View 1 (tube, rainbow, N blue to C red):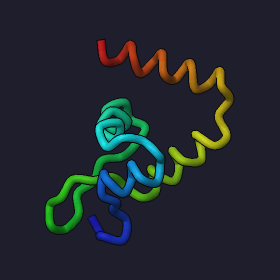
View 2 (tube, rainbow, N blue to C red):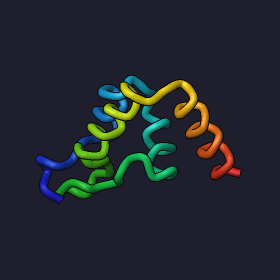
View 3 (cartoon, rainbow, N blue to C red):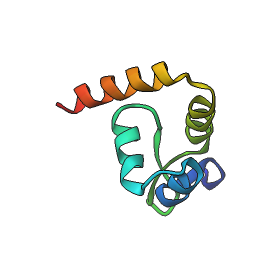
View 4 (cartoon, helix red, strand yellow):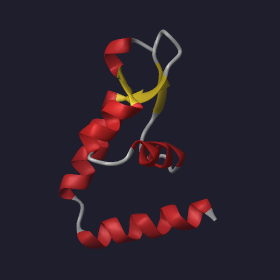
Length: 76
């Protein structure tokens, strides 16, 4: 992947205001797209981080609750 389209997990966590471990959970649940840069480092796409950030800013409390419930069930 072109490095211009890639974001490290630490930078993604900083942009979203979450812990780095949460980035892994967001990838596992399909909310962020996993990607590797040319050096083979794990990260996510900038596009998916921007989409997630937009969703977090506009989603209702109910939508956030439903998503949390679905994500919790998927880990069981």
